[in-house]
Image 1 (cartoon, rainbow, N blue to C red):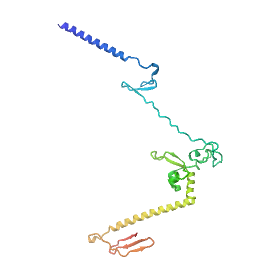
Image 2 (image 1 turned 90 degrees about the vertical axis):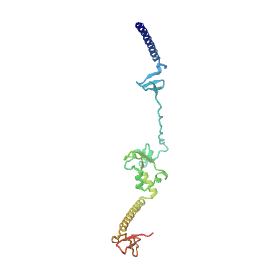
Image 3 (image 1 turned 180 degrees about the vertical axis):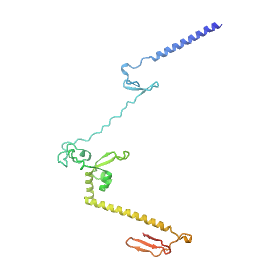
Image 4 (image 1 turned 90 degrees about the horizontal axis):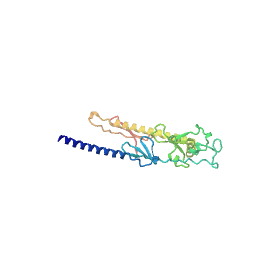
Amino acid sequence: MAEESGEELSKVVKQRIERNRQKAIILRKSKLVPHPYAKEHLYSEDTTTIKIGSTKYKDTGGGFLLEENTYEKPLEIVPDEAPICEPDRPNCVSCNKPIGTSWLFEKFSFNCCDSCKDPEVHKLITKTEAKETYLLKDCDFDKREPALKFIQQKNPHNHRWGDMKLYLQIQVEQRALEIWGSEEDLEREKERREEKRVMAKSKKYEKKLKELRKEMRSSLYDRTQGGPHTHDFGPETYNEEEDTYHRKCTTCPYEETFEKM
């Protein structure tokens, strides 16, 4: 009985081995199916990129191919300014010859050719400095006709700040003369504003000093009576030069100067 059962077991094992072998053969043949695309349309650019026709696929290594996004941003075409035609060529203010090429004319519409351009004469100035030097407002640059041209550059002090606006200093000076009339009038206006600023600063200082004196004097009280002192002021006196009033307490050395509205 033991021998018969051993023979039957070996037959069962052999049958199972044969079935597994057939399955392995079928699975192997399924993996060897030829590629559906023709060979002339299929080639590999590298170990991970495959191009089929006009489409690129990326081998992710996970058992599937990922189509690459080959979209490219279209080029932005920035048209240059129209060249200076022969009838429109102005004369240079320095050499009085027709302008051929001019950076100043291209950027600032200033009639000066590149050969006559002088770094000491044709300086650039920031908008902030121009407003302080020539007492100009924002509307004098942008709203007043013709509007002054400018170029923009990165701020050298901090790249996180906004771009600087650079103007041609000669044009800024001409605009200032249009507004103030002459250099003498501009200097007089500067002096007047400086005097006004100094006077305002002086009045502010005197006002703070008066307030401080009042606070210190009002904090005095009669300690002998054990309570706060109440001032008993005498007659007021008027100072015409300073337009102020003065009065003194009759029971303590407290004095105060004040103004009346």
